[in-house]
Length: 337
Image 1: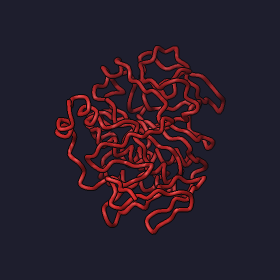
Image 2: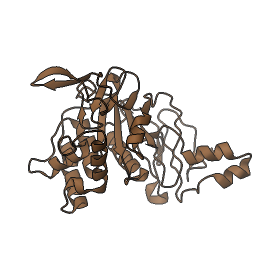
Image 3: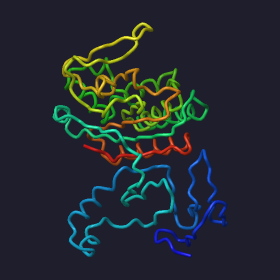
Image 4: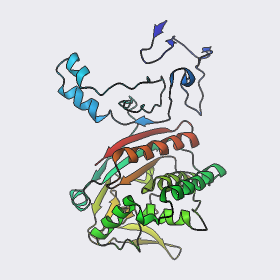
């Protein structure tokens, strides 16, 4: 018998069929399961369906700057009050560095923000959530309930104010104005969804995955987009358009190709624009459909929204994805400015 330093119970070698009151090592084809039960009532254990792509920057800085073990110990962040639990998918406890997964199959898409966009909107930040092995389909009662709950959270947050009066959405209006868009006519995605959530008809039901990220957008009042990762060609770039890029859309019920205005902020990949006017309108080429099994979700923020608020929204989205698609591989990238 051996002991696990991060757990309060012993670890035994096990094979198929090994079982104790605190462990169960059956292999399940359609579900990923930790062999050991999380001891939440006894020791505040936590087990989330989340993988992180990289260690915390503070840990990296400590490793680079320490000459020996004592210096490393002095430079590392304070340890959390509660320990990690054993498990394949884990989110860190507050104040703790995230896990560094050994699975090299996670996180494949490169995301870049051009210098021109950074100059236009200093402090812009984004969190990326990448997931594979997803299960999508028509909206369900559960995904619909999430949208209704999000609308209630939004109403409580606004307290009778209009969505554009929120400081974060006011910052997005200023950013839209800076690249020549009229924010009252082409609203950012968070403001557009918030207005629909507060209206009599409520939020649209699209499909289960879209319902999940729309619920996060409305509840947290931040722009959130979802792309079919299998349809993205190359990396994703946030740039100011030349006006020559192609944007696949639908006009009068027919497939059509548009071109963004020169200087317009767009997300694009190697084949063309995936989202116009930053996060205003998504293209049909990479949108999430009921057949999508892999996805990239982008959560975007501007000051005064801080990194922790954006990352909290990303963590909540990751937990919902894990709940609606058991066994999915989910990776959350920390906020990047």
